[in-house]
Every structure is written in C-alpha cells, then in structure tokens.
Length: 118
Image (cartoon, rainbow, N blue to C red; front, side):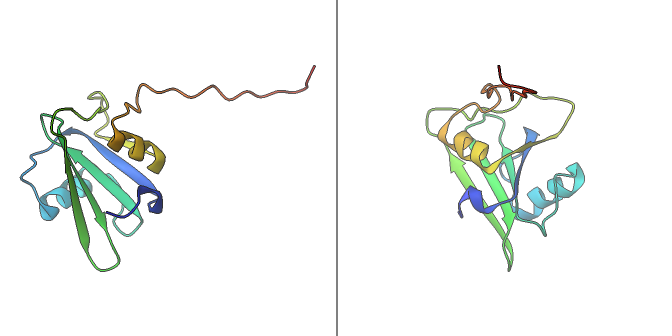
C-alpha cells in the first residue's frame, strides 16, 4: 500500500462490515454511506465484527486497490458507534491507528489565543 501521507483524507466506516466483501461490495458502502469521492485521493477504511481485520479501499489512477491487515492477538481501536456512519481522520492519525494507538482517546493541547503577552 502507498503511504497514508499521500492521501488527502481518510474516511472510517464506524459500523461492522462483512469482511468477505471485496472491491465491489465495499465501493457500494462508500457510495451509500456518502463516505467521499473516489476521484479524489481518499482512503476508505472498514473493519470486521471482531475488530482484528481492517480493509482499506482506494482508487489509483487506473483502478481500485484493496488492502487488508489482520492482527494476530490484538484488536484495532475504533470509534464508538455514533449516529454518524463515517468518521474522518488525518493521514497521520490513520498511521497511528495502524500502529495500535487509540486516536479517539488522544487529545491534543487546546489551542491558545493571546491578545497580548504580559
């Protein structure tokens, strides 16, 4: 798979997906859930019920690419089932997710705005 940093957006489907689905089935989910546009450089990420397998779908210049990662003894951290079917991540957050970090619990420092320095 190409580096996640090469992509503009990463869209995570929050609900369980049948991992037997291939390119056609997953691309139908992308369209029906309104996950994003295939003509842009986007990654579309899906997980199975047990959260030990993810599939990543993207469109290259000449066709679709499907990538899969299976964990042997761990589970992927995943966003809670919210009202939204789709959650957006940065490419950096997606790289952290692949490494096993729970990007939904990580909170950056709040941005500070100063009118003057004392």
